[in-house]
Figure 1 (cartoon, each protein chain N blue to C red):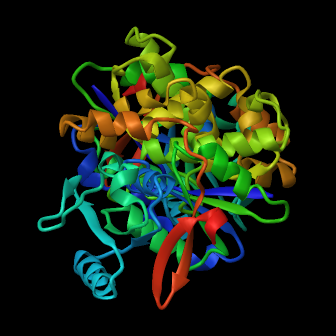
Figure 2 (cartoon, rainbow over the protein chains, first blue to last red):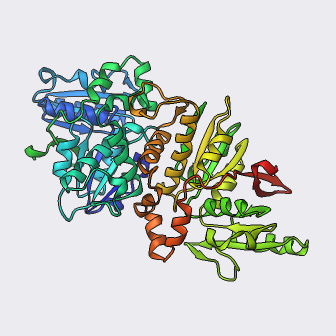
Length: 260
Length: 260
């Protein structure tokens, strides 16, 4: 088994994901929000790239009498005219249970769509469900690509960290020792960026919230008064759900793995 | 002071380096070779992007009676017709003392030229001289960009590691504690990729050679029988030289910092 890591949504080449399991991370905040809504009983999340398309999809679902929530952000702010934003704290069970969430965000929904164009299976990862994702992704004979959404075309600390947490859990499932830098070979086989992610995960494992204080996007959200969101997104291994991306009628949708 | 990190030669935007100190890393093997030749008394290294241009520059210098060595590699192999390759072991003092080395390599010379197009000062970094580079680069009021050459457009473990070693030395010079993941703020201020490099450096500090066993390009060179080169390039903080890039008559050249 081999584990690769893509640093940004822009670095996705769908053909290179053929036959692989892709795990998509946009920790602040798209994939943390998706994991939260699914954990809280949301029936389905529809990830949409463009704002206009999100409005159309939500309107169509409403016409079909599907209970729908229209949600999204650009630049960390709720989109004008959208009833819901990209904060996981907006979605307690009483809000999302049984609903369909149509979501468009700056980086995360692009990464989900790009990964779904190529990979055999696309899972939605975050710090919240890193261990649960590792258990699903660790399948002998199937290579894995960690797809970090990044921020505006650049690698982000928080996405690389969450990808590293999944790598770390997989290494432990595979029985590899924790003093990786002393081992002649690593098993599973890790790409250069996956190795860097592994050590990030070791460094912040006991205090993942601190990584958001050290990340560019984390500090931006803090300056916008979103500390409670960061606290939520840093809750390592508190969710057991593994959202998986599927296609239907040309649209992507996300449901809990066990439901599909 | 702020420290940024560019993962590949392709990610260099010269205008974004304005006013900054850039430190260029192509650990396997261009910058390790440059540091070695300068430490062994080489008068000057001329880094050239194209093979044909390297031949021309070497011929011109020879016509001017400058003692010159023509050196280079593509794909890790010596270039056909070139008397010298890109191995640091080819350049003991008796070979290079007082000579000018004209060098073209796959990634490193492109990164040096790209950095020189924008930065205030360009230093040549490697594991060999990480501490010496940190002492020169740590100047209050001047931001630093670690420029990793990478391998074929992708981030490489060994370049990120060496950049991280310089970051680690600068953090220590600045008096920052070593339990970085517990600190609310880091000083100097680090970009997301510089943080990841810092933890790589902590992980491999006691055994930097092991990182080459975990890197794609390191394993390729090992399979080509270049283990002795890797051992040499992993010798952390054994050289005190800090090669600096200058321009003259449209050509770049590299000399030891104290000589310029």
